[in-house]
Length: 260
Image (cartoon, rainbow, N blue to C red; front, top):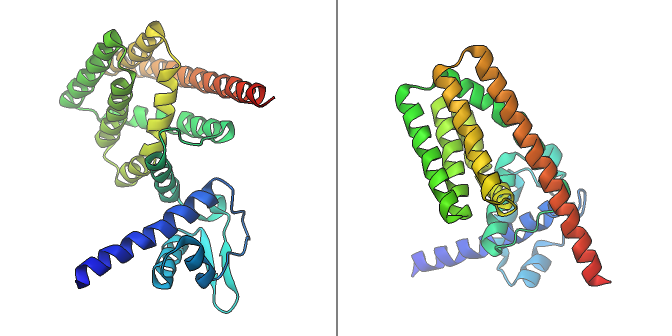
């Protein structure tokens, strides 16, 4: 009986964490907002006070809340205080709640900008550290992606690209990098799925081709050729970013037209 009570309490505590984390991330709760008392949150969410306190403590450990003794509970600016773990956690929860992740154009553009800055140096380091076995595994993943194009299985192709990214991070073998990749996996999945859903067969083929060319340069090319291949990859990601900007803009325009 004691064990069942513990599980129930843990589930209640997660309700508090999930709800407040999403509201903070989506801007419904602004920085410096004072939250209701524990008792009021308990009544509003139908969660016992002990579970509310546990949830608030977890959010405080993520640096998104500040619990001030004798003063109250305040929302922190997560952009100034939280880590990538909060971003990964929130995206995962949003994804669990709905197939349509409520992601706005500004946030999407921020993610693409981050990836353009972050991914090419990871590839560059992986190119220096990759063994023949690593290259073989990466080529196999690319071959599997290409096979998906024939059936237009975009979802599987997206999963394979995530696998390619994760395998590349494993080649680099830096513990901090691996933790970051784990944390940002939910939003990596989202942006890739959105991108692939917007592409036709020829465009998907181009995605695979540029990956294959880069690996060929790693195996046979000079350092200068690898740099050129990296620049080409970077440019392709900049084009993907622009594509998503236009897609989000047109989507907003359609929603506005529907409302009017």
